[in-house]
Image (cartoon, rainbow, N blue to C red; front, side, top):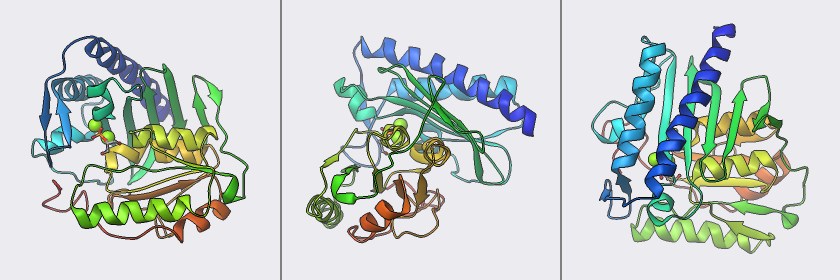
Length: 281
Ligand SMILES: O=P(O)(O)OC(CO)CO
Ligand SMILES: [Mg+2]
Ligand SMILES: [Mg+2]
């Protein structure tokens, strides 16, 4: 697999770029908006078209590989991470941004073998930034090496997180409580890019010290998790333990000192897992 991983990486980059062109073209036109798990969980025909394009392209080159794709799962396919080579795809990470022309929209493609992410590609379409990582070989943006921030003092940090698309009052309260706790540490700032993949690339780039979220999905973070760890950062569960990509909880941090401070402020809860039978929540 070692050499073929470079073939996978090159192919993932080419497909992500092609997908990004479709997204950019679609941004110039009308976007018909539909909803999925809630009135604020949005999807467009472009999400579906781009996912089909990516999966069809990959199948031509790697006919035996498996897929976990956001829109395929929404259409009823299983969300199952096995030991087999698997492409984990978010065709548009930041659909709400895409709908509103808020300029952070990414194509996210992770590739796992034995349940370990080996290749991560995040293409931030409007910034034209191609983030790439291969396990053990570093992380890059447009070919330039990435390194997380060296900051160890949480009071000098910026923390990224998201509000999510769950409007259950109890969940919203927990999310706001965590944000308030982090803000009052105090930290320099709290930010939301509106896409998990780009939030993780911001950690890898050293622009923010950490990103945490409860409620995103495996396709949002598979690629980004490798990009963060290959840039020298940590990817953990929000309780500070080992990350489980299917658990819908993640904390990406530049170092353990910052991670430990953030863990103490997060109000924990467990959304239904991505690999639970009824995962559409
Ligand atoms: O825009 P998407 O792909 O629904 O993803 C959201 C979270 O689920 C932003 O990361
Ligand atoms: Mg997403
Ligand atoms: Mg998406």
